[in-house]
Length: 185
Image (tube, rainbow, N blue to C red; front, side, top):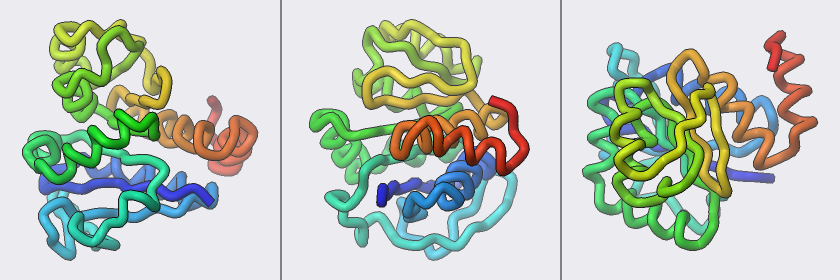
């Protein structure tokens, strides 16, 4: 069974994070919701608190198949300033393991050089940061290039989550899940 870590920092975008958690768990992917700052509960940018499964210091990254970063502000900035998480993200990228980010969070990938020459998407006001990093913007709700998945925004959170299911399980599993939630891909 595939296993992912979804990393929560104060100010994350609730729908982007929890849609991925929900869809992946429905598909049979093991999901660990991880608090970057070690809190038992992470509070999103709209004041919704969610109980975490683990703190960053407790995560065995060798057991994860993917790192997922939700967007939101100031959540994205809080993720990016955590050196421990960034070191693990670098390791995943360097070793060809899956990484995914949505909304503002793909800017982290651009800042770290992961997106140069790739197709990617992000929240429209962050497109300049991606373009400066040499990204060919996909302009879609979810894009995949190599082992890097990016999502545009909250409105594309289902497409983003289904793309993760597609890549970690199969396109058929993603289609079956979309059908079960009455969602047209």
